[in-house]
Image (cartoon, rainbow, N blue to C red; front, side, top):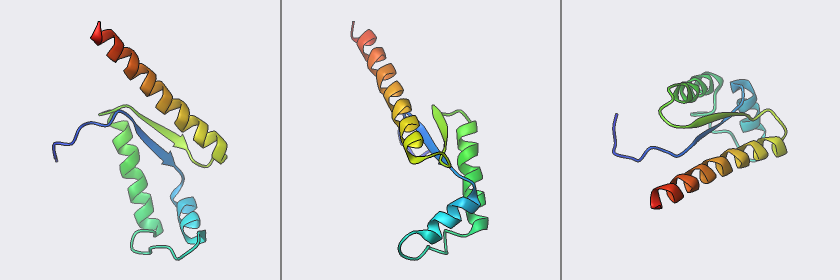
Length: 96
């Protein structure tokens, strides 16, 4: 449904298997929110986000969040930098 929101410049999905997500949620300090953090729901939510990325309605990347944190951070940083540089280049061209 259209809500009049602008399209994002980039969609970044930090992807992990649902079982791993549940382990991380229940292993962190505090209690997991069992209303949202149960395996069945996490499987469905993951599929929804992956489908959004497949629809190609905006630039998107799927980052394997099972990789070491430094690798995940670098992947995200590189993609954001690429989008900013691409956008800056387009703005420079349109201003001429």
